[in-house]
Length: 469
Image (cartoon, rainbow, N blue to C red; front, side, top):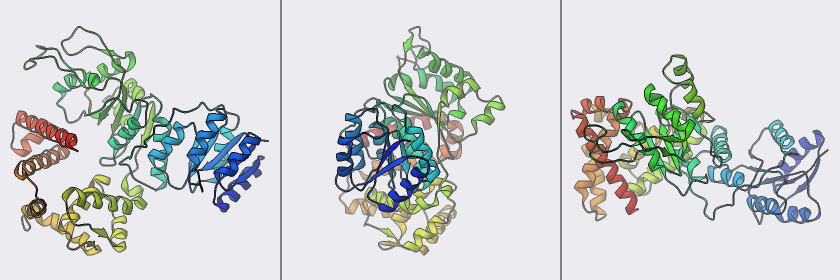
């Protein structure tokens, strides 16, 4: 029989969990706040401490930190109804054995407690003074599980494969994994392998020496060198050519590589995170993806649910995206009515979170007044359709944006608008053609070199804008 302490200010939660644990043969002592539990810990050490995050007075993470500092082998399970990446990561970083998102399944909670009892849990990394804010949002059970996995695996140095449909936020997961890892102070470098022509991808990854190929006038560092000590995120890994898969496998297996045309062996200390919307197992069966490479990448897997699989999060996301849009565009504050949010939650959004965000940005510009009603959602959809057919030109949206910018005293508007115009067209063409630059260039009536140059200019402007911010 094990002695378990439960700390939660919700009497109903304490009663239900304590009853289940007692039925499983454990002795349970209940506490309503952190101070009461702290006094008890000075007198006797239980076999397990289970604590809520939000408590009267000191929170559960503070209690966790104190308990682990004085009793490093005491297993602690943290539970909360407010699950997010920062909180789960902080709990695991402080040494929590597990994280239970409320409402939890009692059988799962009991199993977690029994697994934790008797285990010697090593102390987590020291907590950082600032807890980063993550763009990932969600309160639904599927997203709580995603947050739990991020918190659990971020501190490890293992490779992670992130799966999910297009637009679900796979890069956001990768960034959260990096920010919550010991590598957070080092670079995070992202590369969409589908957006780079096959003949240039090897140089992008590993760099090249001067004269390695036509146009290589000087030595250039690749993404592995740029990410040294940090994290390299390879998006759409399923589109990587087979020949290059072999080179990547060698780097993952041996931690070293040569630049294209080079003879200097370069050691690499990089954590690799990969993402795909494709079924890699099926591609392996078809001979389109190396099984050994997939196993190297798929040490841990995090699957992001489609937006239709977590409809409960749509109102939360919509409110946040709308607030971000009006702030970015300098527009008057707007809000959704409850009927409008309910209608949004019923939609499937095949483009997932990205599609919802684009809709909210469109509504921020074209919805009249400060309140977005259910009818405005239909108008937004109609506006997009009409614009395609020319009944309502896209110039009207540009005019609205320009009016708002000029009214706010904006300067250098022409260059900014031209940059955004290019970025929208380039992003749209690449998205439609799955990142294939030659096809995107043809659709836009540009040469591939021109498209590549414009992409470089767009990225440079984005970097300058981030520097200003």
